[in-house]
Image 1: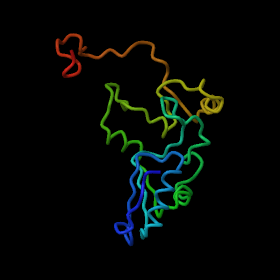
Image 2 (image 1 turned 135 degrees about the vertical axis):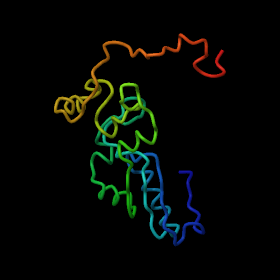
Image 3 (image 1 turned 180 degrees about the horizontal axis):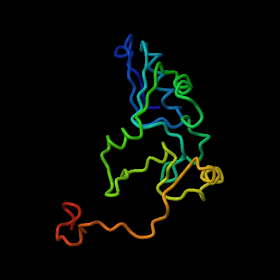
Image 4 (image 1 turned 45 degrees about the vertical axis):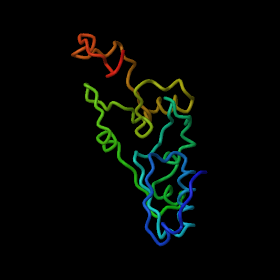
Length: 167
């Protein structure tokens, strides 16, 4: 890895390590160990997302729940596995509020499926594991749309480009 801890900076300090997500835990454990080896008094990990418990089928290479630390371990177990002194995650509502994306229907303008198990489209055909989870009700999804979303004030009524600087 291309990371290093500067001993003169971390020795004897209580360090707070912030990361965007904790998926498998391998990188986080590596960094926590590195900081402690450099003399950090303690390392507290804060994750800027909820616990990642469900596979990502929309572009991230996480296909099964077996590879997800958050699906297989309690918070205490995850803290021990990454060798941190403490570990905390952002909640689903806090993530949606922090990003500030809301659709006209009141739903968040981003998927939180990886944290909640509620997918914005059917996922039962992605893997037998997910088909079973959907059949048991552990994972849910929105129904396929029957019509396209139509905004109240369509952009095509305007002569303004949708993106500033667009030709």
